[in-house]
Amino acid sequence: MKNQILSFTSAALLVVNLFGCQSNESKKLNTAQAEPDTQVDLDAKVALGKHLVVIAGCHDCHTPRKMGPMGPEMDMSRALSGHPAQVPIPEIDRNELESKGIAATQSLTAWMGPWGVSFSSNLTSDETGIGNWTEEQFFIALRDGKSKGIPTNRQILPPMPYEMIGQMTDEEISAVFAYLKSTTPIDNVVPQPIPPLNAMKP
Image (cartoon, rainbow, N blue to C red; front, top):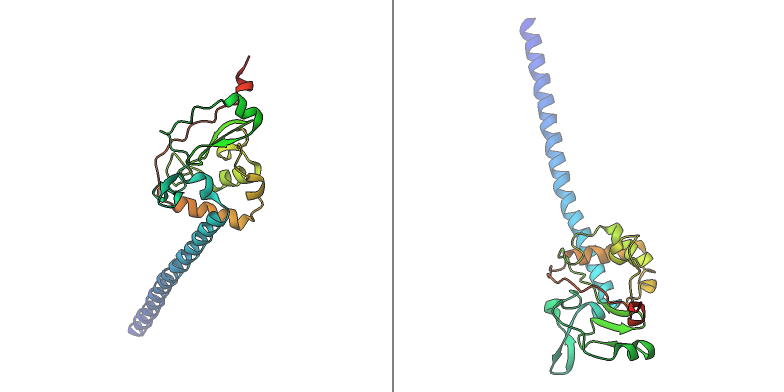
């Protein structure tokens, strides 16, 4: 009788162990199957973000231009890195310009007008760009037009059309952010904007 009890107990333990192993293997299999799906979803999100960045014209201001055989062309080695830190603004009569119109540098990354001088931001994944930003900050920047996505900061200056870009859906803005976070990091500290001359007078 004692031997029968021991045999039954051993058999029960064996069954438990077998089911336990199968359960663990199932969990591993499920996890392994889930990971590619997650990566596929992320890849699709990044691809959508890249598409939106292109059709929204983000490169127009945030990617410096260089002269090519057909004229000015985007310097994709510095894609979305903003106004080059080492490039000064041209020497022009800003007082007359600010009262009569607007102008841009040859790279189309610095703009002068009644608001002063604005420089296109570094949007790459570098810490001098948006590398340290949260998605919430990105939403605040595009929806509320706040510099660096901080609610207490100044408004983003022209020519950034955040009023229109901010009309993207939540999904689209999130996709753009995912793409920008995936870009090649480019170390470029963009200059601070320069206030208009009239505002600088006492």
